[in-house]
Image (tube, rainbow over all chains, first blue to last red):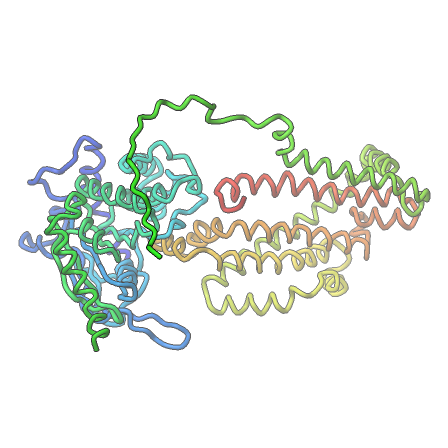
Length: 309
Length: 289
């Protein structure tokens, strides 16, 4: 069943690839009338009306993890929808299970309740249609050069042959500005560059959903800001679908177009806030500040209540 | 006491000229560059040892107990020139490689089983704790009984001496592979043997290499010791037999030449084999400095 899912994801890639690859750097935005790459209309057995059906559905998902002594509930009946080309952000304090949730979408953890559906098909195991960009820098195999790293998932999942994989790898390395470093090993790169490689690697796979688990958290503040901007520019160009986990309110508002707030212990949906109007330029603006304040109040109300009690 | 208030100082801004005062990079002086070569430093150590040996032997002045370095070198060159020593080395190495490779393959199979199943893990745990402490040479009498006086029993004890330490090291290496890297591998849909070969083995290569080195040393020790014990395998003895025979005939310089040969091969394999392997892999990848 999972192979069927994976291959159906792969089937939609050629269309995607043409938009991304053939056009090269010249195209900054697809024409409004063209189908967005992550939402191919052809080759998909769907009612045209159903085009607006969400790409990724998280439906009443409860997650638990085990310690030697007890079973801990990480999230409780969490539901949200991610549509094609969404930049959906999961925001919450540490301990709200957002990373666990992302791993569940990645297929690394099975929900104890509810289900996760990608294109209507249940997610049961990890697969190359949902590529994860992790926070840790050691996600890049150190024995492969930068180019080989980007090629790795393409070859491992047998998506492309060696030659095409190399071509595509160079294309995406160029997009993240690392074409010069193609033959360098990861240990010679800075943290920001390693994350760029991871992003290029994820984009090169052209996954249905790109999963990012606090990808910029281990970077310094200046590099982080630069990476956020680059990510938005890439999205503008490629229009991938993104599920992004962070614990920074500012980052959530800047990166996402929709922000889901989770409460801690266990993670439950607290709110979903639109943030499509914000970019790095709106930092410090009155509207940005008030939204940030609103989110801040929602996240910390429990603590206030506890403190007053 | 009033609180200290730091003074408010004027701001300034300056435009910088291109930096030309000092060159940005300099090459190190020649002696420092020569000293940076590991070969030079290690060669120096060998020379010092040889000189000390020569001095000690001359002071001792008893060829039967401790021949001089030059006498040993002469015996070594003679042995090599006559082809006798080379033949002995060839016999020993052939058996050694057989046992070593078989041991490596078995260790790989055992650890692959151990990372994929719970029962495999238990099997590895139990077997290594049972057999690792058992000296290979202690199994030799048994091996002789089972496989007879010959190559078979030698290979058997060699496998025993390589398998357990290598399996332990490899398994420890597999367990030390970072979780992120594992998840990344599974994320691309890698499973089973492909997952082991493409993710676990390269990621654990530093431990695997040290296991291979330990295994190599253990195999040498076992082989020489085994040959000392029962000597001729099917009429032709290896290096251990050469040492044993010459000791019986009190050619101490040849005994030393045989020992020197073992040491030389060890150095050669270390510097040409393992060091090259390390340079091409774990060092280049930044997994080891």
